[in-house]
Image 1 (cartoon, rainbow, N blue to C red):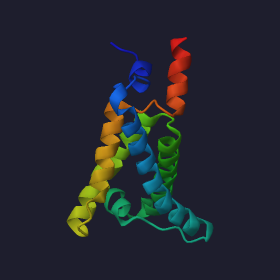
Image 2 (image 1 turned 135 degrees about the horizontal axis):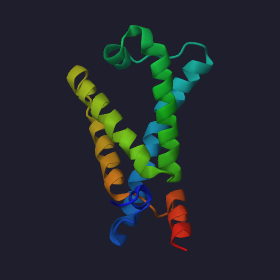
Image 3 (image 1 turned 120 degrees about the vertical axis):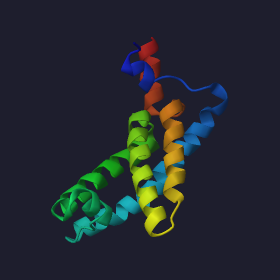
Length: 143
């Protein structure tokens, strides 16, 4: 059975390395503006609540879980941009965007979360070691 580190830091095929960097940066940069808006409302003392969270987990859990998911999304965006634990962040991206994309498609007709889910799935399967902290860690593990 292969080690978890061999999965997390495996190298992608050389021809697509820059494409994976572009996907990683695009997803991170798309996530940042939405997260900034949520953090602004937290700083103002009126945090936004997510109705999907209320539907899935109950109204009493809405404020705390929305804040928790905002923290996770912030860390995920930073992880994508820096290329740190990209595959772990991609697991979160696939799950989150599958849920929010389906909810958005049913309620409002949005489909952009499916594009983010597809990009996260690509990064989950291939990683992105070029121009990333994961790449530096992988090089140190080889020597």
